[in-house]
Length: 372
Image (cartoon, rainbow, N blue to C red; front, top):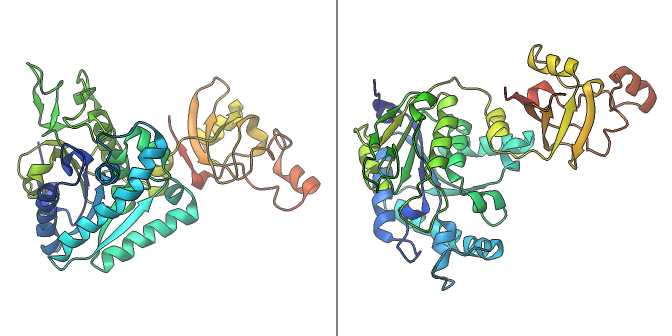
C-alpha cells in the first residue's frame, strides 16, 4: 500500500532539485521557477518541519554570465561556470528565503568530507548546528573541484547520502519528469510507475531516457540509484516533478513512491559504499575473507597477499578475495608504499621488529563495509 503520508509526517526532509527545474532554456536561473520552489519549501519550514535542500544548478547558472550558449564539454570551463554560478544560485535562494525571514547556509561537499572520519564528524556536526539554529542548508557538491559530480551528474546520489547523514525522515527528488515510467514517457505505451516496493518492481523498466532539458547531467538511472541508496537505509523516497513540489510535500498522490527496504546503519559506512571510488585494491587470502565476512573482524597484514594501486592512509580501498570477487571496501591505515614489506606477517612480529605503530590493522572493522 502506498504510504505517501511519510512526507507529510516527516519532521526532517531532504529535497533535491535538478538544474533543468531551475533554469531557462538558455541556461540562466528562472526566477519564477526558483520562486515557486522556495514558496513550497517555506510552507514546509514554517509548519515546524526541517528542510535540507540539495540543489544542482551552479554550472547552469554560470552559463549566461559567461555568455556560454550551451553546457561546455571541457572540464575546465565547466568548473569555471560552476565557480561563477554557485554564488548566483545561493544569492537567489538567500533573497527568496529572506522574504520569509528564513536564513540559508551554503554547504559544499566533497567525498573526503564524508568518508574520512574527522571530516565526516565535522560535516555531521555542521548540519546539526545549522538545523538547530533554524537555518535552511543549501547543499551542492563542490563542482569547482569535484570532477566526478561534473562528469556524471550524481547530485541525486549526493541527496540520498545527505538524507542519511542528517537522519532525514524522507527524501524528495524533484525533476523535469513527473514520475518514473516503464519507458521513455514521450514514446507510445509508456506507463507511469506509481510505487516501487523493491528491485523486482524495476525489472524491465527502461531508464535510459534523459530529461527534457540539456542543462543538467542526471538522468532517470541516477534518480533510481539514489532512491535505492536511500530506501536501503530505511528512508522513503518520492520522485516527482518540481512544479508539484508543494503537493508532494503535502503527501498528495503525485510522482512515484519508493518504499523503504532496509534499516539504517552508520552514515559514514553508507558514504563509503556509495560515494567513493576506491584508490586501490588489497588482495586477501581465504582466511582473511572468512575473517572479514563471517567473523566481522578487522583486516590484518597477515591476510593480505597483494597490494594494487597507489593510495595513502585514509583512502578507500577495495578488499578482493583470491577469486577476484570484491567483498568489501574500507579505509586503509597504511600508505600503499608501506604495505609490501608487511604482507603475510603477524602484528606481534611487526611490532617486535619495526616498533610501535606497526601493530595496527590494515583496515579496521569500524571503517569497513561488506559489499556481498
